[in-house]
Image 1 (cartoon, one colour):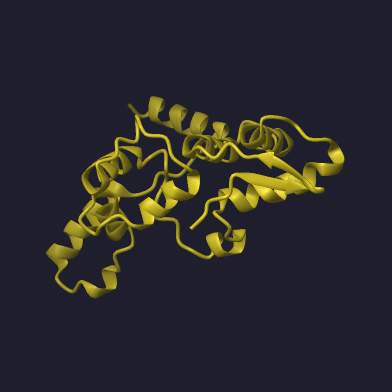
Image 2 (cartoon, helix red, strand yellow; image 1 turned 60 degrees about the vertical axis):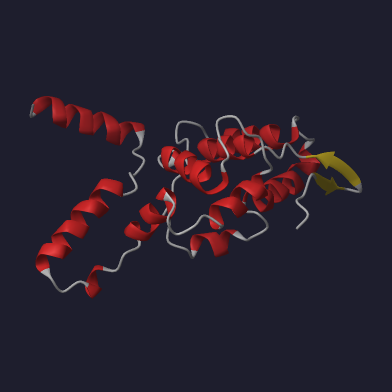
Length: 181
């Protein structure tokens, strides 16, 4: 498969910063509730293209950025799937999995965003990341033995995706924990 390297807007080609690290940074920006939607939009377009386009072209660049970050899939396709991985939280598992399956050190390696996603999808079932994802998706209704069920629930809690709290929610939680310690 040929990975995209350029975006075409109004007949002109613009290079995309295809590094998987840039795409991961874009997802951090997307999930940053401390900045406005407009700031997020400008930051992502700037990260991927290296400049802020004229207002008349901005919609096209945003559409292309969305499509690129989704590896060519629509937002609806991504939203229909249950989230079972978080790049930031699961980074140590990804590092271990890439090292064991591909002998690639993600801390040193540079690769295209699409290749990074393809390699995640190709991880063997024995990789740490695959096992964590399998555990997160495990259907407890199939487990009849209560002892086994409790063990699996405990394991699922250990690897559960942590919810991002808004600054206000985090402040309230910190205050609550302070009062009851």
